[in-house]
Amino acid sequence: MAFLETAKQRYTTKKYNSEEIISEEKIAELKEIVRLSPSSINSQPWKFFFVSKADMKQQLANASYWNAQKINEASHLVVFSALTDIGRFEEQIEKTLPEGSINYYKQFLQPRGESHVRSWMKQQVYLSLGFFLAACAENNIDATPMEGIENELYDEILGLEGYQTLFAVAIGYRHAEDANQPAITAKSRLNLENVVETL
Ligand SMILES: Cc1cc2nc3c(=O)[nH]c(=O)nc-3n(C[C@H](O)[C@H](O)[C@H](O)COP(=O)(O)O)c2cc1C
Figure 1 (tube, helix red, strand yellow):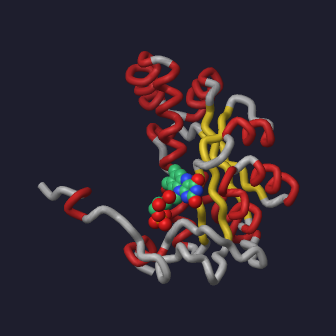
Figure 2: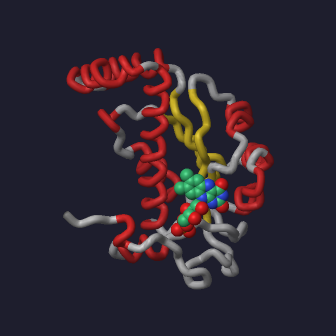
């Protein structure tokens, strides 16, 4: 499918068919795809958790407000977290990045302070969300990005250290009656001329 068609067809799934599970092969592909997400200076300040075990998925669903049912019925839950431990981040880039990228970090990011660096790291994780959602759509996997979760509880349940949960994505296959699918509810966006200028 051409990507424009994929973009028109993908949507935020509100109701899943709990009988349909994503194959291990597809999950392995999604893991590889999210690993390949681009990031500024190839910084990769993230960790992704693919949750399918019933007990852990249930605990996370219970920490997800109005999103609980979607998570319970979806095949998997993917949790996106960002590094918070700056020392660990600096160690990581010293080991993995070329000198030019490390110099960029030292010259333009580090001097702006830890809160700026943390916010920049979170931006990279959001970029991986866009990449992941596009990949799901391209693979005919339905998805629900969710900021409506209790982040600190997620951190506790997952036992995070040096990372913080930013958001989660339920993935699976839609229920035939999901009212949010584009065939039932038309996609709503601002007009092209409001958001794109051609100069
Ligand atoms: C970062 C982010 C957080 C979101 N959080 C939620 C959420 O907690 N629950 C939910 O049902 N939808 C959530 N959404 C879905 C948006 O409301 C949805 O993407 C938007 O209305 C556009 O609709 P579409 O994805 O169906 O095209 C979120 C989307 C993004 C990108």
